[in-house]
Length: 222
Image (cartoon, rainbow, N blue to C red; front, side, top):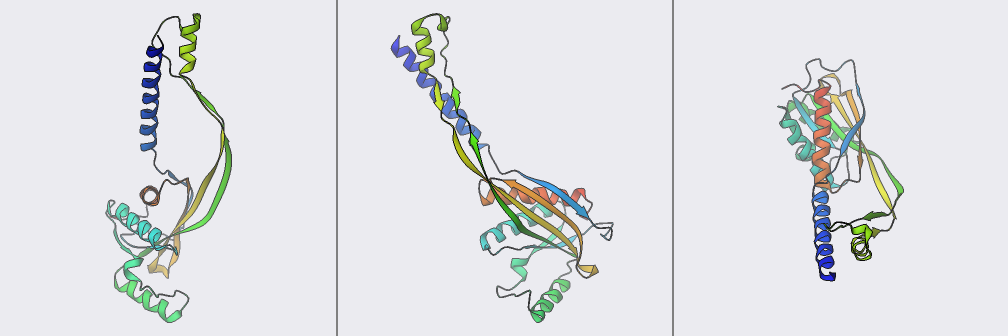
């Protein structure tokens, strides 16, 4: 009887481990918009050629965000460009001569709007995750009515103690500026992300969320 219990217990543990792996592999990064605004002066037909500029000192993050946004917008029929490909490494937006040079270059490339993204806030929240009891019962009748039956059932129970964990929350702001109207702000949206699993996963989720929000607001013209 003991070997039977051990076999069932091992099988149950293996099944629980497999379920856990499958659940974890399915987890991705979720990004949702917390609010959007649209100006009255936005082009009624939307914008077709958009320059994407991620305002970050982290080159890897900037590259990921601009590339993923360009890809997501391209799927919606929008022609895009990335600031990393257009602006020189030593570009200084506070230098008037340098800024004018880039403004002329952007205009000559035919862009009618610029989409910027920036991290506006980062929060940390500590919460308590209570302990849980996971059962691994074996397929037998009357397990509760006998000592060996109950012993075998409870032997397959695993208790996970509670613990504290810290959640990371990121708030990003995306702004769309109309270059035909002296760079006037015509659309803005703020997004919220909880515990992004990695930069690649975040970039994909963020790009889809923002591009969908722009499309829903009528800001994209095929």
